[in-house]
Amino acid sequence: MVGLVIPVGLAILWEIAVRYGVVGGRLMPPPSRLAQTAWALARSGELLVHIEATMTRVLLGFALGATAGTLLGMLNGASPLANRLLDPSIQALRSVPSIAWVPLFILWLGIFETSKLALIALGVFFPVYLGIFTAIQSVDRKLIEVGRVFGLSSTGIALRITWPAVMPVWIASLRTGLGLGFMFVVAAELMGASEGLGYLLLDGQQMGRADSILVAMIIFALLGKASDSVLVALSRPVLRWQDTNRMRL
Amino acid sequence: MTRLTVRGIGKTYADGTEALRGVDVHAADGEIVAILGGSGCGKTTLLRLIAGLDETTTGAIDVDGVSLTGTNPAISAVFQEPRLLPWLTAEANIAFGGRRLATEERQARMESLLARVGLAGYGKRWPRELSGGQQQRIAIARALIGHPGVLLLDEPFSALDPFTRASLHDLLLDLWRELRPTVLMVTHDIEEAVVLADRIVVMRPHPGRVQETLPVDLPRPRNRLAPAFDLTKRNVLRAINRSLAEVPSGPGPTSGNGFSPWV
Ligand SMILES: Nc1ncnc2c1ncn2[C@@H]1O[C@H](COP(=O)(O)OP(=O)(O)OP(=O)(O)O)[C@@H](O)[C@H]1O
Ligand SMILES: [Mg+2]
Image (cartoon, rainbow over all chains, first blue to last red; front, side, top):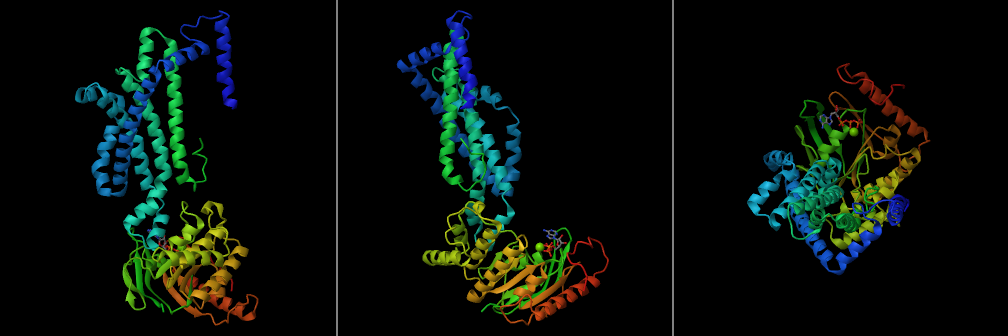
């Protein structure tokens, strides 16, 4: 709650300054103006279309990237052979900044949805892959020995020891991945899109409308926070055993 | 009926460390054997080999005449740390040790053991919500739920205070009387060995070998204050001193053996 003091205070000050003509307000519209713009966008149904477009991209790209990252991370964490075979290539690809893929993706996949999804999925992939891979390799040998003494097979150990032990790191890496998903959806939509919050940003810039840019930014922030909270809420039941603070909303 | 026989066991680690050489240990059915020895004389190595967590370099281990390879349902263990699975509740941790039992039997034994280790009502707690001593009780219950013929204990009480330790000695003896597993227990603590064991195996290091084996002919329950108890303790100390005296002043840490020769 204390954290709200500064932004709310600044917003009020800005509103007053614009009202009394102390400053203009075209490049930095006051809160009331933003509310009007948001309301107008919402009323026309336009806002919902943009939100839906952006969220669909993020969620699909996230699902793709997170699935691939999880599966490959598990494979390489579990099998030394697969690891020696695949990890060097993955690490090499990782040193290419993801945005650098954009031209190639457009060339290969066209300028429409597929290339956008590919970019987002790529951004999500690396933190998830790396997170689960490192976590599997650092599972406490002592707990694995408990599994062996009490008769677990290697599949049993993977399911009943390694997987739960890796869970917290996996979820943390999904959160990082989701954050990156939002980052890359903006990049993808700035590349050219006819709808989506990124489009709203670009459109606002071209039309000189700072208000719609700010509305899009605020909605990005809200969506990002909300998706992260959903992820945390979903993971809470399986992480109850942890005694860390990390997973607080 | 579970006899444990360790014959001519040797273990040399991949880095060339010879941890054990020609170790013979025998435990009759339902017997409690304590293994005493200074740090680094291969006690943990010996238990790990019996538990099937590591491979022997030479020698053989058998249970009731059947040679062991790898882990075995007849053998269960309590480690120096409780090693509870942090994502399972106390009762689920106990049940984990009884994976081979049918569901109803597992549930029933879990409940009775939870009560036997004095933690009825704590079953739904997470390991992090239990004290060290309580966690070790759960670990003991986990090790006993599956009717093991042989129970291995590696300094299970060394991290606990003397009060908790004494109460866990009583608990262990109670459970042993009831379930009669053959017990092989590593300890640093001479008194602990004399309180619990039927026989004490004294080891010496570089490489780890058996120095000698001493019977403990004291009736149970044992009185720590009785003169006979003291006498046995002295005998054990003498054996330990002999093992120290015969250690060649070879390489490696010589001062860190954990015992001072003062008898
Ligand atoms: N994994 C390993 N690789 C190489 N050497 C090892 C390994 N584990 C133990 N050793 C060595 O084997 C010897 C015996 O070790 P061990 O842990 O069995 O001793 P210990 O009697 O249990 O000692 P403590 O009382 O301190 O627990 C030591 O010299 C130790 O350094
Ligand atoms: Mg040890």
